Image 1 (cartoon, rainbow, N blue to C red):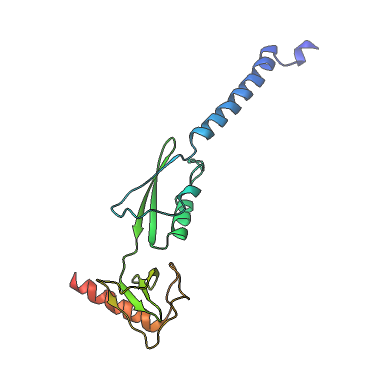
Image 2 (cartoon, rainbow, N blue to C red; image 1 turned 90 degrees about the horizontal axis):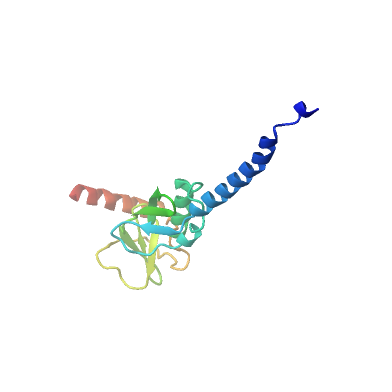
Length: 169
């Protein structure tokens, strides 16, 4: 009967090994939680939504997840690259849309990128940007940062302006 029972040493060490592995996994998980987020680049505009990345596990965090979180809450960002620095740091390098022109509206101005994306709304005439006029005034309150002004005429004007600027470079 004794020869069918497992080795007594194995019975003793199996729970010890299982508990040790469990404690090791808990410790490993805790040490790879994001605690520090560094934003690289010359533009020092603060990014919104970075707190959503804190306390996420660095091992499970993907480039796409970070890109989605940051670009969704920061409409002026075109794309994001991310570098994981173990054990607990993420370095984010955003690529920003550039202000291309402004569109006069009934109550202010929409500052837009080359693709027609609204980057900012302002009541003051923007300096250093070219106006893109439309045959009627757009409603200032309809557009929010991140939305695209989807009028064919305006997109054609922005495209022509981009082409003219590219020729000058």
